[in-house]
Picture (cartoon, rainbow, N blue to C red):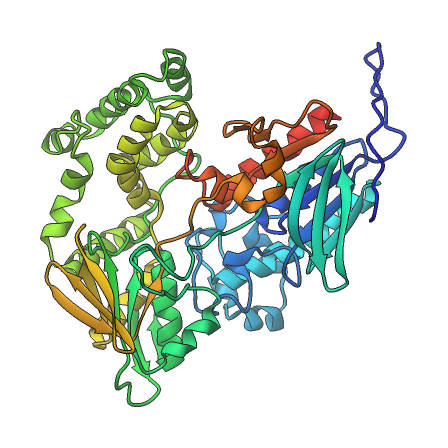
Length: 539
């Protein structure tokens, strides 16, 4: 067993900072963007740390959504260059420094580089890999020790006198104790067998989708994850020919048998990315301060109090729309919000939305209604952990779909590709509604829904990742389960009294139940910084 000595408790009665006799040891579990943002803060601290980054894959930095081999080169990220929180430098500055050979390898032209551009996922992966190398170099130059433990899968975590971590690597199994541990594990996908009893295919790694070449496939979901799966399968069968704002899809040869059906409750594609200004303007009524006052008034009625404030803000922007949606009535709001689009043909609604989004972006014209919704969801992120379970269920039913429709827009290029596949006759979008059924049918699956039946070779589950709890991820915490408490606001895990150090959980699957908006790189920055500052404060 490798042993990292316990932290020496050094205190002074004076205000002069005391440097520990040795470096406090820190374990960052997970080598994706959240860990990079934590390292960004830790590397600047005056007290040197002994930092260990555990990553189960072959190299740290990109994280699963941006890793090469997991993603198809044509899959686009839905965050523009200006929106991605910089590490050592902004994404577009890093790309501008890349030579022609590097840009060609990433599949982008120098003329495409800019703060408003959207890039393939693997480009962001290479950016994070490069930034990690720079962060490690900077940390070491400031006296920190940094060890990248790639191909190290953390098996368990046990808080004893210190926090012990068990792992498995190509060299076998081993363990060590650490003063501070940050859990920044990534995606937690649904199991292959769903509650409907059908074995589904996960959307990643993308090469696994080759099993469906020449087949008819259903994709459960219509978000960017579903679009990624469709783009990958289309890439296996042909190519997109794109010229400015025009796109078409050409099959490599006869595409007999190949067909995609994207399926969701509403049968709508996500909206095309819309222009907005940064930073987002503060709301007059649903502000951070008013939200804190609403929290102070207690959990009962908290959602209604915040909703009343949001209604006042939206009414001041467009009173006619607020009245038509009966915005003051929370129950049934999501149904009323999507009614107009659901009454239209899916592709007609998509074409209309894309045209408006392209025009607004060209004029740098922002929609104040959407801007208010985008800011409101950020304010409510701080409120949700304080809500009752019943209020969280109401929010997830009525407001979360509206907020998601606002912030989970997709690149225009992604929308044009879906339209190109539809025009080529190889893509349909189906509305499932709430009542649908899937069953094994021969060597495939039969799906029964309100408008008919569909028989496919297989189903790809692109509905996103699943929530998890700490004990299910790390069974060693079960011994402390009776006294284990997790604060979703500070992300602090309470440790036994005789255990020195800190345990902080910023794993997305654990945060999802109380923070449905936790996904995204801006949240990765916030969580990484918060976890690192908790360590710094304890030192």
